[in-house]
Image (cartoon, rainbow, N blue to C red):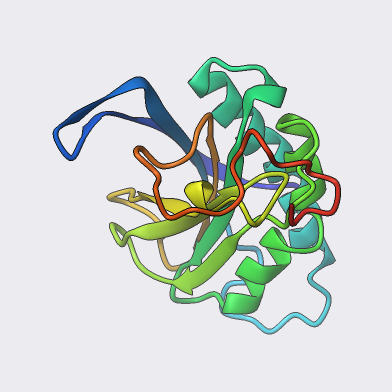
Length: 194
């Protein structure tokens, strides 16, 4: 089954000042979102393999777009996340099929390595509703400075028979982190935790 993409949007957020302090270099997050037709909107389908396969394609496509938008090399990516919002004629399992079985491995290739689980969220929604994309360090989940998120909203998506799928990538953690824990510089990235 081919994927029907209606729209792709990419956004880069840069923080230059936080709490009255200059952030240099700025912390940067990119989020890429694809709006796709939901082939199972309004029907129950036992086998969601076609959505899983679409998830693999989206992991590559959206991960690459984020890295390109940040103007970094894949190994310079520090954190990532994924999220999906299904329109009213879909179901949460459609979002899960896109995000979980196959999207992660291609995304990891686009950011080089990615030993940690990719944080995710899924929800049902309507056009203009905010989709939150959680973020975590790509190689070591215990790096607290990279617990973060970014939101994306498209005024015309998702329509009732669509799904919005988003991937986010950063080149840094939060500005001014000071809650302790493992640092990016000390992370080994061997077990996905430390």
